[in-house]
Length: 114
Length: 111
Image (spheres, rainbow over the protein chains, first blue to last red):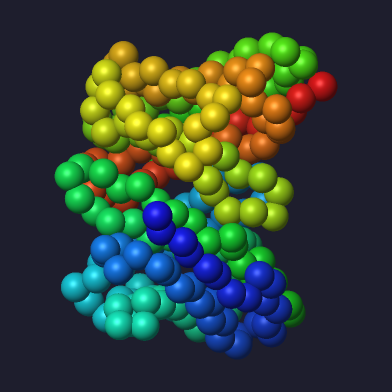
């Protein structure tokens, strides 16, 4: 089955700096890669996703890049703000036959310091 | 997200007791999922269902059971066979082969 590794486990940046979180996956059949943000005690919320037919996707301060050959994808947050502090999870799945069985990474605790 | 509800928010279980966690969605999603989250860890898939009256085991199904009698509902039972059930349980739903949206979660504690 799929295995997703995520690094780093903790990340501390100064407000205004950029943050990068990296994930690798093992199953070459995976073609869908979402990123979720989870605040303490709350539900994970989708912030951006990418499918394997594109190499990069941006949404304001957030971008995701995908390298299918190397089987890794990354989340980039620019101009970080204190409200970006949370745990971020990457995930991977093969979208097929109506299913979307996600395998998650272990999470990155991002802290944005003033 | 607002279309997925879970109850109760907090649940306490005694040793040897079965408990059922509720998950309801009004998003008309065909697929529903149950995940378990332990402190400092990612989400692990327990069971998922792509259609009414059908469901499949995920990565950690032992000690859990589910049913899918209605499209809107996907309850999870934590049985006494699950030896370490204390965790945060998250339900999710999606359209076929599409983004998953999560409910607010149930925090289960074994007394």
